[in-house]
Length: 466
Ligand code: NAP
Image 1: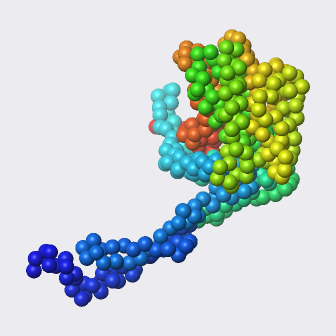
Image 2: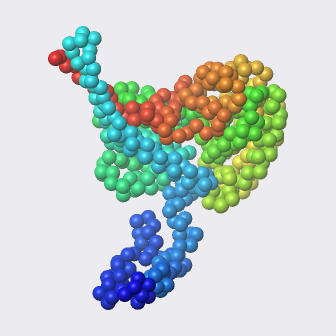
């Protein structure tokens, strides 16, 4: 029989049975979050045998909403924290990247073998887990601030108790479920939610089994926890508040500076420790920069984070919104010009209009305090020395942003800045492969990068004579 005749007549009877069995054994539904389910509208799509043009079987035909089922973690985060869904999705990816990065680092924990100074002895070093850890995390990045600690701790072999902020417990609980499903042994990760943080955390820090505290939050609470950690002489990592300067020099690419400024200011509704808190712009560009920022910030859509066209969600609570409003009126009272926004929005929810202030005077509280909201104060400078002095004139030292096209100036300013991180011609520094952390009252210790796992390891040295 010729090949073309075989194609037309199909398989023999036993062959057809085997074909039918194979087609029936394969699932025909959508596989979402570990479950098989039909498409939401019940639709199906036919799979055709190209040799006979006959339909083989029908499989589920997904609608747009079916694909979005996988977005539940982002949706939860937007519901409890308020930011736009696109930002929550980005945070889920960022948070997951810490798990990937540290799973790769876990197999690179190494020691060394070397000759000592007498030439007769040998030195062996090994790195071992610090031991049980206590983690306290904030509400602004409820998932990523968790995985940035949990992932290196697991990789190093530590157990942990995590306490998320009371405003955003859901993301951490959902993360714990994901890690449980992924096979993390029971007891390795413990999550406690509470409205009485101080009362719950202090006994844990005084318990002799605890060996490390890692905290992300305000400098004020960080100070208290450092003091409490002294009793047990705990290893401590502190990721605290910021007051990031954003410097635009006269040779900067202004288009790039405005794009970077929007990212650095408006990511997470301005509620980020890395948020550009104050814009110091060379006097030749300050007016144009402020005008362009005002146009862009005024065009942003403020709304509930779940609405598809929302750019800017609400602030976290009434207290935060009142603080932002207070800082803006203080600046306006000292002669700053409100170019756009400047007020809370009417109606329900803690919304505040994206705001740009020009001619902000030295000594204004906006320049000295962490704003944590969608407000961009623009001040000007005349010389590089003035810019650097203004940038460093704060107790904080988490991150600074620098826009210049001059290589010598870029390196001189980067070296002179008193901050743990610098965004050079870019408005975002956060990256799981990079060491995140601050100096001065922004804290100590690093999360992410090659350094991140070191926070969870002790070095043991063994002396040997030959
Ligand atoms: P926060 O008030 O310091 O709270 C942070 C965490 O500490 C929350 O879980 C909070 O729980 C808990 N907490 C409060 N008082 C405590 C106490 N006496 N003992 C033990 N735990 C206590 O800060 P936040 O307002 O949530 O977060 C905003 C701050 O975090 C900003 O300053 C921001 O710059 C900083 N932050 C820093 C980084 C960084 O990497 N450097 C990253 C993100 C945020 P309850 O709220 O439930 O009481």
